Picture 1 (cartoon, rainbow, N blue to C red):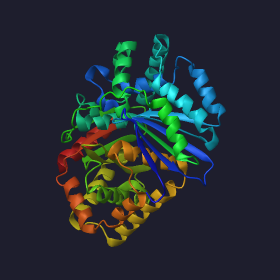
Picture 2: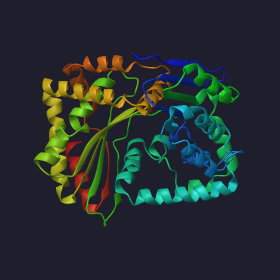
Picture 3: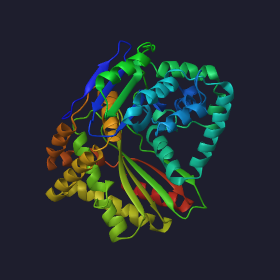
Length: 425
């Protein structure tokens, strides 16, 4: 990177990356494990997410309340999340509080009790979370499009939260077995960015983590070619239909990933994109339209999300098909390409002005690529993308139109989408 950085590999496989930012007042800390919902066996559906919850419930020396009070008493807060291919815990605090803060972080990461009584109460919390997703179409849609894309029998096609029945079956020994497999030294990445002394950070982290069992790297079922399938959940009480379309794109190591990123920006990532301008600004067909990229080690998707009145759905789908057809036949303009490059590079530079974003960048680089990438070198690769490379990505992703889809809304919205699919596939 353009700024100094330090990487330490402990004998047990734990990877630590430290980015000193001496002009800042804060320190941001992240702990990752290279294990998420796609690393679950069929009988473990939802376990990665439940284990994440249980780490906050206490250690032999700290209760859940003590963990929260100590972290917040240092002027900090902490967040945890589970996704398909990793689980993360992230916090930010005044820089001088690092040693006390990390003592708490290491304690709950390395020594969770997973008390049976806490387990039963936390199951109820996640039952409520599952029920909440069912009541929120935008969140339910994410589960549906994953299932349509990968199928309900593949880990990538299953919900991250699990189901009511899968949760009820989990016992403490099941969680401990998953924890030991997933949270080993070989799977752990620690990232620190802020006003810190790297040597002091390395000493503190080593003191906590050097004796953690090394274990083995996690494994997962490989992704296959996405399915051209469809899912629908009827929601008669909803005034809007929520729609997702998912196209096969590229994995995170593919050399064309920067071209696909720029294509995503041009198609629907921001307000000047083709989809936003035509569907919302020019035709007023919807309030929300956006595209997103999903990238794993072995697969990737470009997805379109749309929320609108069911009566506008057919016209919106026709517009989407027209925009994609124009991209395939005519490509993009030089102005679109240059604007997209400026947007991607500018947004990255702005984000990296703070300690939390630097911590995230460094941690995810080590987790996903096992090296720390210089942001400016990445920006140069983005700037070097050509219109020809974008066109090759367009033709690979959108031709032929073999895609998955999902809808949450009134039954007529499903009928409209099915009719549209049959007319173009």
